[in-house]
Structures are given as C-alpha cells and as structure tokens.
Length: 225
Image 1 (cartoon, rainbow, N blue to C red):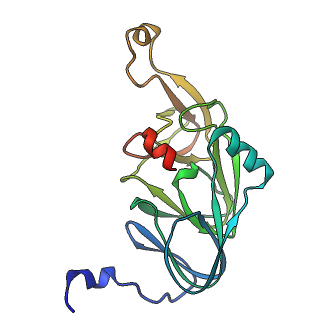
Image 2: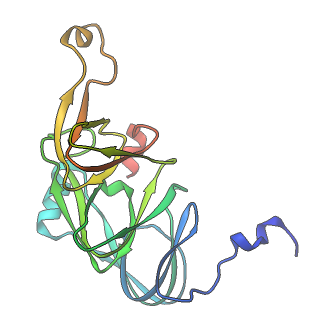
Image 3: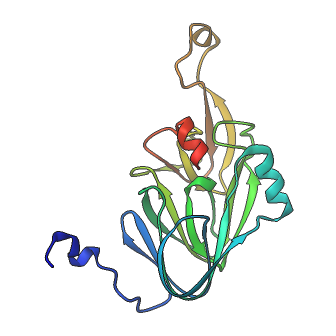
C-alpha cells in the first residue's frame, strides 16, 4: 500500500529511552517507565502495559476549582509502555523545568508532565475574578512539561523597567516570580460610549517572560476547557 500518509515523519517509532518527546507539532509521545501525569482525556493512543487513573487535586484544589471553574483535571499514567497525548489539534511545546525554576500556566494549557515536577493551584495575585481565572497552576522542581496552545504563541520578555500588559483571555503562562496586578487601559468616557473591548489587562512586572496565544478565549472554548 502506498501513500504520503505512510511518510517517515508520520510513522511512530519505538522509543529508545523513557520520557517525553514531540511526535509532531500537534501531539506528544511519552515512553512511560513508572509514572507520569496528563490532562484527563488527552490520551489518543497507547501500546504496552499501562493503567490510567483519575488523579485528585487535593481538598484545596477541589475547593478552588468549585469556586472559579479553573483547575487542572489530571490522570496518572502508570506502567511500562508508550502513550500519545493531544488536545483539539492544538500546538504542543515541551518545556524543560530545572531546579529553581517556577512557571505558572493556565490549566487549560497543560497537556502532560513528568511525575518529578511538583504543581500547585495558586492565586494569581492582583488578578481578582478576571476572565483568565483567579487561579493558575504553578510548576516547580525538575522535569519536562508539555504545554498546548491554540496557534503559535508569542513569548514576550518582561524587564524591570518595562512591564507587559496581557489580555487575561489570551495569556498562557509566565515566569512565576513576576508580580501581577490588574491594569485599566480604558477611560471612563470610553466605557460610557460603549468601550473598546480592551478594558482591563493583567500587568506583569519584574524579570522574566510571559506567553500569550494569538487569539482570545471564546465562551465556547472556555466551556470545553
């Protein structure tokens, strides 16, 4: 049988070492030897002896999710084998987190990660009940984290003398050491006249970076996340 479908770049190869790699721009392959964690429902295929179990967020995480709708619904994948993960054909990116790093990511943008990484659902200081949510997932420790984005992200450096302002519906994540607060960029007169559609942003200050997606989150997408 012949077809471009069977081109080498589309063929899954046996993993040489355990861990996470990009299968292609839209999916991640994980060679499991023990345990790893993934977004619930994100597994698209697997082979080998693997078990998938719902992973709780702890009492604090459950309460935060109940209040805000934000959170990180996870499953633990255990055993030996290979699994592939994807979500709505979004673009996949692998981040190597090293000791001393801290990255905050919106729960809707997390695909899977090594069990060596620690995560916590924390308050976004100064954000209030914004469209981006009051809580984000903060990753520390060491290991690999797969992040998904609807489109190609824009990574913007943040410096001490130049804060960055981001739409709360477009933000994917940022350096956890950055200071956050709300910023109103629309005058009262503009709001009375109907507004610009860009009333409030999340302001990030300090030294680090912020990741944004090339579109705002629609109400339909928010319900599906």
